[in-house]
Length: 136
Image (tube, rainbow, N blue to C red; front, side, top):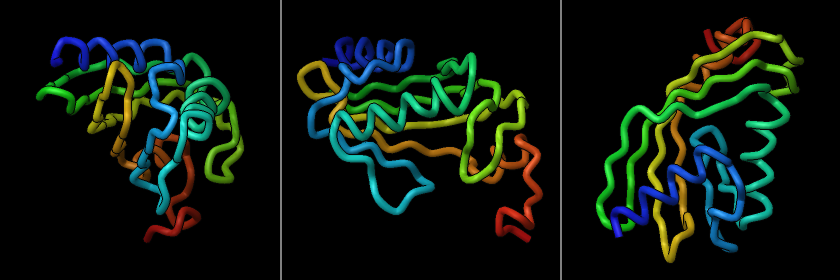
């Protein structure tokens, strides 16, 4: 199953198509209290991030560790800020943000994803004053 798991993750990170997600997927973003549930909701969030908030967005995978149907993936998210994010207007700035995810794959689809990244680091790259972001 390791090879199939790797193929699913590479496919999803490359084309970001929600077809890689189960109908009842849970996508947990470390900055949100509740997960995105279901293919439509999780797929819409992912598409918004890669297609609306950031232009020319891509995920450059740096490391993958697969253990059966579970995988840890590290990647560098890159894109130009062109859409509203966390109430912030588009800055036009280019960001490079290290991200990590723990994924569970079942029958060729992602059943669960837990995503981790430095949200304050992202805000810094976008030029948001940290006091405005609630940080001292």
